[in-house]
Image 1: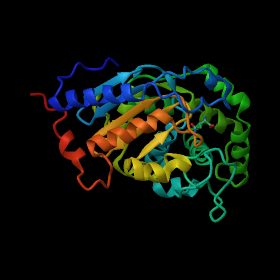
Image 2: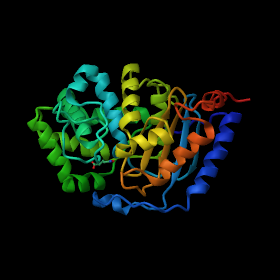
Image 3: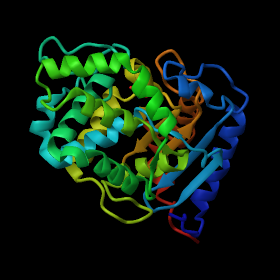
Image 4: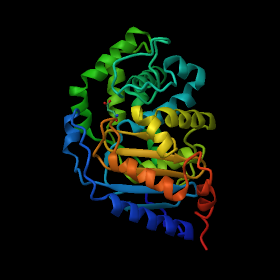
Length: 332
Ligand code: GLN
């Protein structure tokens, strides 16, 4: 999709300047490490760094490498959760996976001992459970439908990075162990290999920071992509997904994130973060240098900077974000 050449409102011109400033502030910070447990991810350019913000009116502002492709990885977990919620509803979705923060690393090989289900859909076990139910519900066509749905959320056709997919399929032994654990607990009944194939493919989709911003804005805009104006997710699926992103989206960094940034968000080991300002904005950041929890270092710093400067924190007493952003989308 070509981005429409929208009129620039005064608010979006100010935000553009802020995003450029934040990019310049953090560009020199090369702390963190590339994910290398998926060998192909270790080939990413550590200097790669892009920021994009999409408003619910459809306006998009960017800075740096906002059109550089990288694999979506775990950011896809939020979107496949929304898809499953739309397809089978809350009750059936939550018969496969819980909504409690786990406090364990994202790749922990464990189930919630009380429920015998994964703790939540944002850790690998929960996302593989969601993939299992999607495979069960949609059959061999499941990946085509995930591709179509995530493409609708981004507003353009997406593609798989075949090298990353194969790299993860060959080395993803922990995820295979999780798959068998879930199959043994009857979380899904289809073959484990089919489910992992689906999960690895969804993680290997190539996106840009701009795509993540538009996907986030689709969630912010109650499921309608604000650029293409096409409906992607239902209202209930969006509410559930944002709630789970708020409590569990940043793995065992989720509590710090909730206090520091105060926005529902999802990170991925490809270096992407998608954050959502409800009813207003989607934020997409790309920088592949990660902290120990697997979250992008500069991505988190940029989101914290945006939240602070624009008053985006959900519980900020001034809540200035709401009034500031009401000016976006209105050209003079
Ligand atoms: N595909 C990756 C994995 O399963 C996703 C992990 C992530 O982004 N945190 O290990």
